[in-house]
Length: 100
Image (cartoon, rainbow, N blue to C red):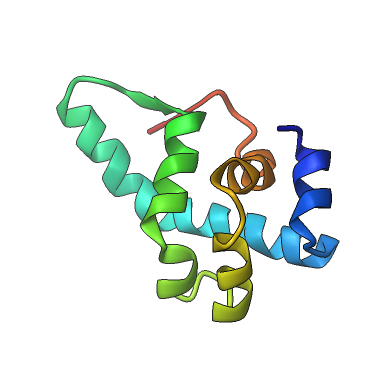
């Protein structure tokens, strides 16, 4: 699904989408170091963007650790189909892979 189609189908405002993307980036900033250390133990030096996005979505740190996403907006976001969630936060992670 394209980003534009995801945003349109989500019913979220531009401001809400920006808030979600910032919370996603902040979540990766919070958990990324530990995740990269774990993959380094396996002999890898990076993780692909798709894994970063799944880690961020699965972590729920966007709301639990005060990553800038209030519970109401988090609930609206989590109610969206998973492919829509992925499409909305993908622009927050512009690189093909992330490493130390």
